[in-house]
Amino acid sequence: MKNITFYSRFETDILAGCKTITLREASDAQFVAGDRIRVSRYEDDVFFCNIEVIAVTPVQFAELNQYHAVQENMMLDELKQVISEIYPGLNELFMIEFRLI
Ligand SMILES: CC(=O)Nc1ccn([C@@H]2O[C@H](CO)[C@@H](O)[C@H]2O)c(=O)n1
Image 1: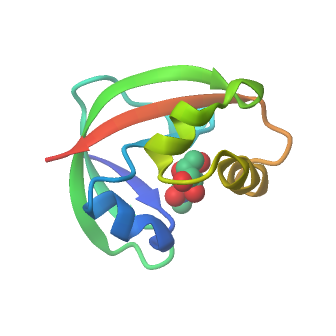
Image 2: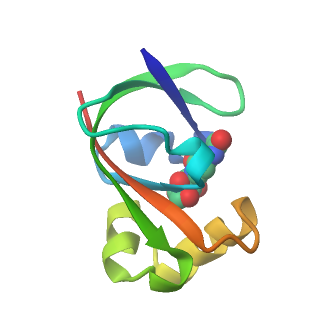
């Protein structure tokens, strides 16, 4: 089974079903619809759930909008700030939509 990591501060939102996308750089988005993925925390590699990928879609940083923010359970400004810190200067992102399984 493939694996993906999330920063531990997002674990609660993911388990509650209120964070249903993640925006990643290409090298971290090598998934296709239907993939079942083990999810663990980035900091300590502790497993916390499995997800199924619904879709992987290219999205530019400049095109991020309220839809993305809602799916991330963040304000749009906050989301842009978070992504700028993780991927400074990167415009080519991929939206991974997922559901808990
Ligand atoms: C741990 C690791 O390797 N990388 C990442 C990269 C991104 N993210 C989150 O996805 C969304 C969009 O980027 C935001 O919620 C980010 O904080 C994450 O949790 N972990």
